Image (cartoon, rainbow, N blue to C red):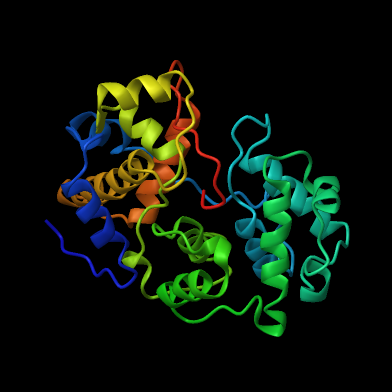
Amino acid sequence: MTVRADPLGVRALSARTLNRARHVQVGSLERALEAIRNLPVPAWDSRRHYAGERLVEYLFVLDTINFCFWGSGRGYWQLAEALRDAFEGGEQLWEPEHLVSMTASRLGELVGELPLLEERAAALRELGDLGAGAFQVPASAVELARGLSERLPSFADPFLKRAQILPADLWGAGAAEFPDLAELTCFADYKLPQALRHLHALEYSDDLSRKIDNWVELAAGSEEETEIRAATVVAVDRLRDLLEEAGRPLLAIEVDWILWSYAQGLFPVRPYHRVWTVFY
């Protein structure tokens, strides 16, 4: 099995959490491997995303408020398109001094009704508070992820979901190149564990299964939620290893993108876990 560098500590955290887990385990990966082994890595959608000269700033803004869509009837693509329209319409979201005055009501006018609008607006104000350094892109994906988590509280997730997704998105959109993308993990969220559970790659205790299947909210940072996210990171890394052994070397972030796209078309499928959080 490939041993990958872990400069952000997410792999170590995930392994430690899974080793003592009481509610979640990684199951057989055979079905998951067969389901995704020939699926393409989704191409970056430059139509639904903004694609103009402010692409870097757009992605910073997008990933700063890319969290918690469940229950709203609106999802990631509605947010991405709304921000695309705002950038194309001249809303100066690329100006830090514009972001520091962002309110929940103004953000709602721009992106529509989403959960946690107050928290989203606060996250944009934090980004704006960085001033001239708000949209700096270092040469390292790890350095960017670490810097985001250290400077911006809304990115300071133990699993660094959004802190890692920003460099991945910058690369996917062709806005930046990084030599260390293999050191990033998948982005532990709602949809990946839903797909992995569907494929029996994640196994939940009876009690956790009942909670999720009955749409019972889990507490952010709870043992159950943390175990789901840790097992997701471990399972995706193991799938990446199996794909490489089968002659298809991919990055963990590319396996993530394949699984996320696969999850969108699952029906019927059991619910995803529900947590009110700014971290994913």
